[in-house]
Length: 239
Image 1 (spheres, helix red, strand yellow):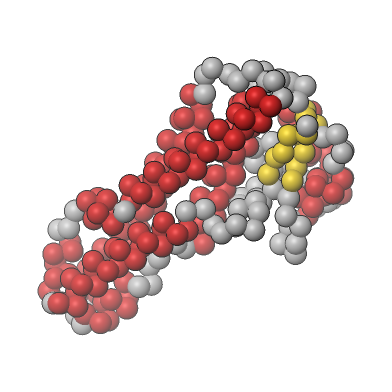
Image 2 (tube, helix red, strand yellow):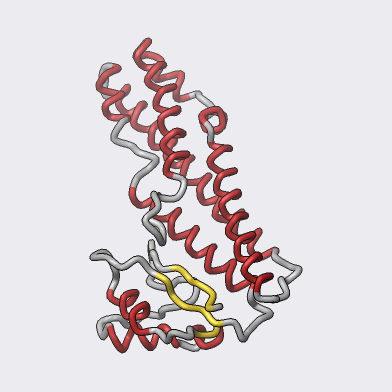
C-alpha cells in the first residue's frame, strides 16, 4: 500500500489491463483448442496496447507529474526558487515507466508459456484456461514495486525542488498501525518537532534515531529509501 490508506498505485488500471488480456485469450481458446497455436504467433506488444497498456503508462506519468507540480507549489509558497533543470526527475519517471513495460511483457510471456505448455500436454481448452489463470499481472510483488517506485519518486521530487534551499526542514510522516517496521516507528515517534534539513538527514539524523530506538536495525534510514521496500513513510516540509 502507499503512504496513506489509499489503494495500491495503478491497481485499477492494471486490473482492467489484465482483464482485457484474459478476455481475448478466453475468447480465442474457448472457440477452439487449436487456437493455442495462434496465440504463439500473436503480437503480444500489440495485444498489450489494444488492452490498454498505454493508458496505464499515461496514468503513471500523469501521477508523477502531479507530484512534481504539488511540490513546486509548496516551494513557491515558501519563496523557494525552483531549479530550472529537472531532467533527473524526467529520467526517473521514464525509467519507472520502462520497468512497468517490462513487467507487463513478462506477464504476457508467462501467459503464452502457460498456454503452449498446456497445449503440448494435451490439455483441453478449459484446463488450459485454468492453468493460464494462475498467472496474474497484479501480483503483490509487482504492486509493491510500483508503490515503492512512486514513493521514492515523491522523495526525489522533494529533494530536487528544494535543493537550492538548504535551510528548509523536513519531517517523516507515517501511517501508524500494526504493520509498521521498527525503524519507521522509531524515526516517526522520536524525531524533532522542528524537523531536519536534507543535509542533516543525509549525515544520518534519521539513521541515528532508527538505530537508537530499534537496536536490531543496522541499515541506513535515508531521505529517498527511508524504511526500505514498500515503505509507507513519506516526507513533509516543515512550514
